[in-house]
Image (cartoon, rainbow, N blue to C red; front, side, top):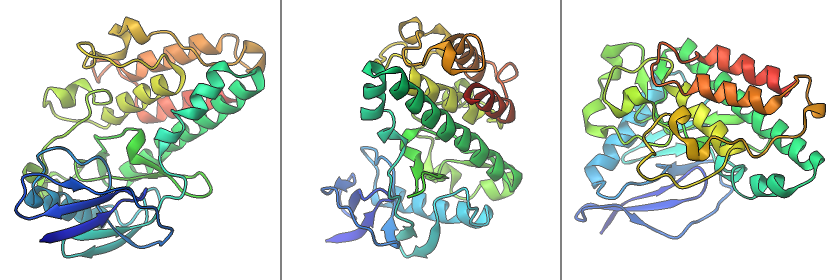
Length: 287
């Protein structure tokens, strides 16, 4: 007996069976209906029905605490073991880092410039969206990655998947915190998250720095080095997509971008840039 059917903000469906040890994935279904029962994101192996429900309940709690902010994927409420969210017509940032990046890598100067402007604009929007959420009580999202950054039909960034986020008010943050666990994606997680240290507002800066690597750097599958900070990963150090300096107001855009990534992914959060500094640096690079 299927006890829960959920459809993600990008159309992915999940079937949850009460007696099975993990969630079953159904084929992708795409619908333009604005209200879809949703538990979106990557479903991990071993997630039980109880764990799935804990994520949904915490997600509902986080939306309530953050007052349905316009920086979030639009929320329509919870009913039993599902929540209803807006359909993200343009998908997630994953789309940007696949075919468009490949075309820019081998494209003309004009194609490279157009890609860079779009990528920098979207990642600047991510910074601004998280800053807006911090103004109303978010400490850090803690799971910022391309698959959790949604785009509406006007290419406006909306943040999704709040179940593992942290609130500034620890009394409100305690709700189902242990039940949902800490399934951070190592490629984007900061060192303090990976080592279970107290998170700060700079946690998400590291993730955005690594998304800059995704957007502009050599995209390689990391194995033993995947939990190392960016500036120690020599195999992906080179920035491979950037128009010539004549397209920018600064002298060496590649060097500037490399500097931004370095400061955004420092191991020690005390040395890492804050979100406002990172956003301002991306705006300066884009101009």
